[in-house]
Length: 284
Length: 284
Image (tube, rainbow over all chains, first blue to last red; front, side, top):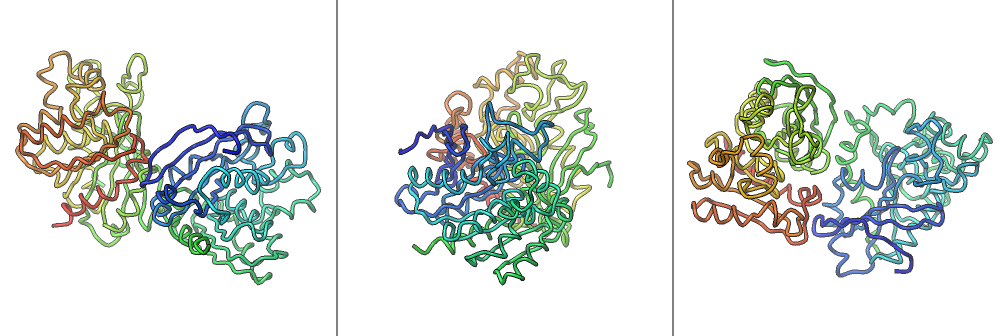
């Protein structure tokens, strides 16, 4: 152990282990909890690939691990799953003054805030891209082969993590992502607070804007429910499609009839995403 | 619709639908919520088999549907899943005076109470064996081919439902069941309150006692985690094994090394149980 990890709980799952840990996150200046699923292969191997899962608004590390049903196939594929929390937490970490669910605690948006009082703790981008993978790679039997996926705000997180850091991830996918925070109410609220009113700084954290200048053409797999109640106001997957077409970036956007924004939707298609990641991650 | 069902929510899941309903339960004299998973086959067929899932202490209809990951295989097998709540609810329904989690609300034990103040509402046995199946069979595209399974208190429920009503279920299984409430603290607390201090009445609701006089030899499939923190004080699966051996009743008791009492355990083995039920339920 190169950094201090406190084991909070451990549950055997599909022959492997679901474990929750707490640690001091330097980038966020607070204690953080994350969950890891170690497939059975972790007992014999030390070079497993890792899929990072970024959750949506209001979630913690628990939602994905309890509701997505990903462990069954991860155990088969030999894929480690890591689920961080969605924002800094704890005493001294500021929250939305109105305790809104779409900003502040539970809503870190996977960016680095520049404005006060947010800038001290709300640096989720550095946390999920740098600090957490370093911790995982130092303490678990994994390689540096990384994939990233997520849901809603976490789908946005997955896309910007991959697009901002060419070479860092071998695969990326998203469920119901916020693809264009520059052009939706959730994005406006979060970015104006975290980044300030100068919108020229926002584009660095917008998947559609980043696609236009992406140095790496990592294929994007995106699932979106057609009955998602946030579809037309917040999510607007067509914006991603237009940006991908304009940039010549490979995108498989699957509109799924009848599906909503819930984990019932995520669970229905998680296997496809795990296979998408495993295919890219399985080559040494 | 022969009885009034209020649809509370609907989520597409693995090509089928997860739906929650509220209805007036006559046997319980209160409103009840239950969940049903309708696999894709429900659109074309009207004779699907039904697996009733009885949850454990503190649960509602939601735990199993959100955490067990059963819908994937149920969709493949064409199995309808029904998850009732674990006790009567609502204004006027008495709770444990100390609000304990192991008695009263969330802890109906799937029996019919005879003592006051419980006897008016706490008739979960009649509800899950008679009223709910009648409602399901009148309102959904199902046959009268029924299986029953459950977890912990709900495993006890599944066993006593099948053992008390020969011919009513074609298949039964349980995860971490309370097999011998006559001989464990949870059972003593619940039964002394619901049934009174005359222990001769308790045996009618005890799987081990019922096995001795079972008229039907329905094979029992039971999974039990060896690291379950309730194993030695509350669950004692060896009592079921002894009772089955004494009665010549078919029992497959699987002790699963490393697994605990959580839904991570249930999810790990739910597919085996679904196949066990589907095999018995698939013959017309």
